[in-house]
Image (tube, rainbow, N blue to C red; front, side, top):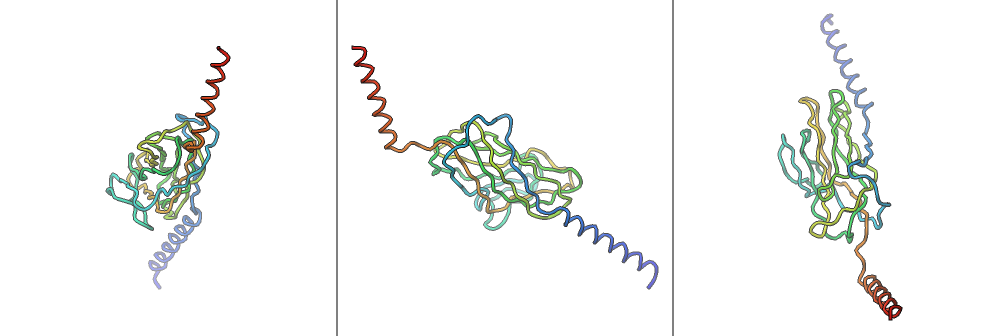
Length: 221
């Protein structure tokens, strides 16, 4: 065996070891959702909690460099790395909530960010209002899945068209060669807040108001 062949084999072994080491060290990224100060917590945690699928199959997405589409069942969005890339839910019309005050994330993403400090910052919007942020990490091109979890609390957000729409929007552009992320089907989003009063509750409230008015009227006579 020539000296040149031995050197090439040794170099290849070093590269393979480094690659394996990088993947082993990267692992799965567990990202915690953080509230945005521009819509800070002012309410106690809402009740009841309504779980809705997001991101899920059929949700719309757009990637400036990889096109738009809908999230396929069991699949993922296109790779995203440009400011403004997004994935957006359908409008939820059956939550039974007159307002939303907190959101819980259970989302999965595929991470191939790399090159050193090429993190992606994603804002979470509810009906167009930013409520939280998730920073997806540069994992040295690990090519593994990560999760976003946690609960954030915020000021009341009213329904639009009878429902609530959740979206994730990328806030920064990754440098060329810095990799990207994609959102996977199967996410669950919890929404909590104030329940729409039941008809019976409305009747009781109306009766109480009428009774109070009659009592005040008698006192004034």
